[in-house]
Image 1 (tube, rainbow, N blue to C red):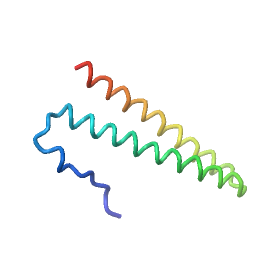
Image 2: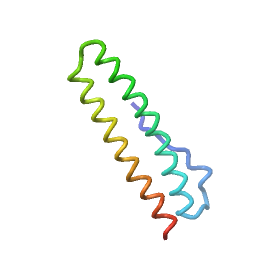
Image 3: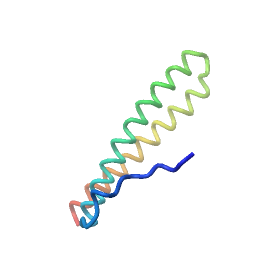
Length: 81
């Protein structure tokens, strides 16, 4: 499987703070899509009798939400620098 690569072309010559804001916002949006997918799939697993597996997927969704909180704080910290 190929690793995910972010298109950096638009960031060339840009100050690091601007690059960081773009990437952090992108990561938060990307994580949001994952959380939606995790929640949806956990429901499907639960409905199919795989509650133990669903529990772990829900835990992953929660960890992703927590990682978003770290990203949000990083974004706020950029404004304070």
